[in-house]
Amino acid sequence: MALGGAMGVLNVTPDSFSDGGRFLDHALAVARGRAMIAEGASIVDVGGESTRPGALPVDEDEEVARVIPVIEMLATDSAVAVKSVRISIDTRHAAVAVAAVAAGATIVNDVSASLHEVAADLGVGWVAMHMRGDPRTMQDEPVYDDVVAEVRDFLVERATAAVTAGVSEVWIDPGIGFGKTAAHNLALVRHVDVLVASGWPVVIGVSRKRFLGELTGRSDQRGGGETHTLTPPDDRVEASVAMATWGFVHGVQIVRAHDVRATVRAARVAG
Image 1 (tube, rainbow, N blue to C red):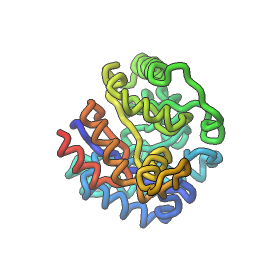
Image 2 (spheres, helix red, strand yellow; image 1 turned 90 degrees about the vertical axis):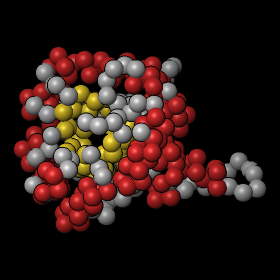
Image 3 (cartoon, rainbow, N blue to C red; image 1 turned 180 degrees about the horizontal axis):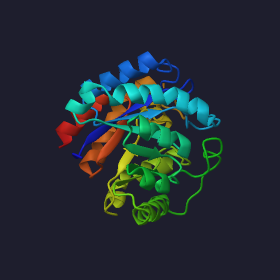
């Protein structure tokens, strides 16, 4: 896979932090997936369970019902074949991963970093993401002695276990915003070259995250003071693209993106 690719975020959910509910309808989700392909996405990442901070688990049957029709339609779309676009399933549930691969997904994007044996059995790629706790608890005062080293070591261990299990395509993702403070997120982005130096291909997901809303709110403030307005998710495009560009320049191979066209353009400029 070429360097500097965009993984388009397609949330088939009612409650995702940025676009929850917009693409819960299958026809709208497929149309958005096709639009991201036209904008240059290398991967379309379909998810049926929100993993925003505080999100509650989704029943596996409901998650399957949300994502499988979308994956089936996108996987058979002519543009997917012509442009060599891949479909990934964003899940932490084995049954959902199995159903998604049967429907045409070729990558399991695993926020739990626990499905490597499933990926091995299915013969597909696997993304191991770092998350402390689960979405309900992950932001309850996360503490690290050295967030960069601890995340790297965890991901290297998971990646090594995956190869041992028989997975031939493994990616690592530091889990920006998953059990991390804004300071932790910035440290991981600033030192993403440490993850790249591990030798495993790196995916990062910074798009529209809350810590970017804090940074853009601070930059928008006029007149000083300590209170900053948090910008809404759809007003974090410039910050998202800036972080993506930083990642590309420092060796990140794939960036998860809501704003695919802008991210792809940034990758081309950075490359």
